[in-house]
Length: 170
Image 1 (spheres, rainbow, N blue to C red):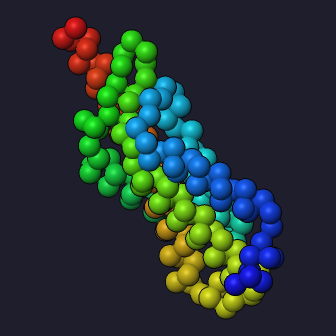
Image 2: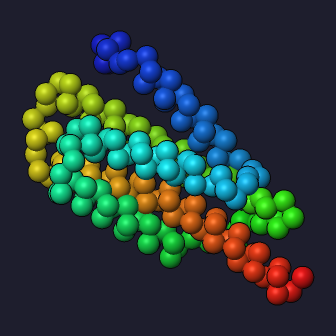
């Protein structure tokens, strides 16, 4: 185990601790500008896309699977989400978002998936060339991204619904 950690580049630890801090911030209720709610999902989409690209390259299969995972969880997240927990202030154009540990869990899931895959590739483990491994990882990376994206769309939808309600009743 210590050999694994000693061979891990220093920047990986910086990414890990940055994600921990971001996840902890997400666990607390916070007030954010509407235009900033897509920053974290876009960063996580890029991170997960790079996870697929760096190991499997750009191919029709890998990109299709990644997009399939993303779109599937995006639609599920949009159907199951509860935007009524989000409060929109039209005066300040900000959202009050309840805290959640889900973003931290998802960030750690992406990080450790990427870390495991990097380890497997560096060690030349045969599992990396197995078709089921490629399929599962591409779907998984896409699914993580879709969850992040769906949360942002739900927040955006809540801001638009609140603004529309205020226009008709204020």
